[in-house]
Image 1: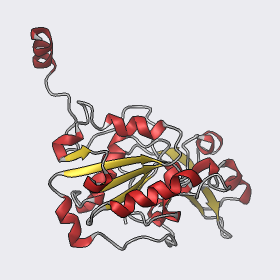
Image 2 (image 1 turned 45 degrees about the vertical axis):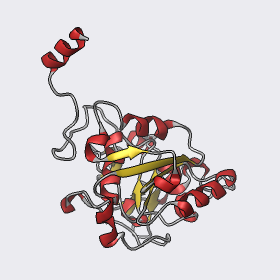
Image 3 (image 1 turned 60 degrees about the vertical axis):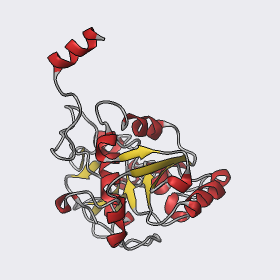
Length: 258
């Protein structure tokens, strides 16, 4: 015990200061894809992406849907003059169209306009229920990390719960398989209001690699209205934390994506 106490005194504080201070990703971090040059592209460029995240319009304008991107990096490898990995953690958005860069597109997914004043009721002790609706397991590791000593999200008032009736926020991973659709709907139904729903990871945002078939619903918003989307495959713990803070109205307005 004494050895660990002395070690802690020597090393000092190891818990992140986020969100009270910005946290920079480490060198070489592969964050979300951003478009370096969005003009003068040709159609074949869109074929680089296995999930159809890259779009090229009739005028040669390029956009990337981070909600579909699995961060494979093929676009960066083949066309580095147009794409690169962004050096950023804060990628969550309130609207599905907000995940499209360089600028958002009209959002056709069902969602509440905002939690509004009701979000203020979630700013003290916030209980989070996580439900896996067919993910590959990658997002689960990142969510679990939020409660370790470094991220220590409990210092911000977030606590895990297994009881939907006690939950304020629902974290959903996976594209929602047919077997998990009813349990997801039932979980959301019994949660008391006010409540918020986060789609965490590419699969939850769009269905990912299986989004175009009958394996999944193609994303959580095809089943329930989503308050916040957290893209990534998987998203980093800070990105998930950003989404949680955004959902309950605890984020500085300058860090908010529509």
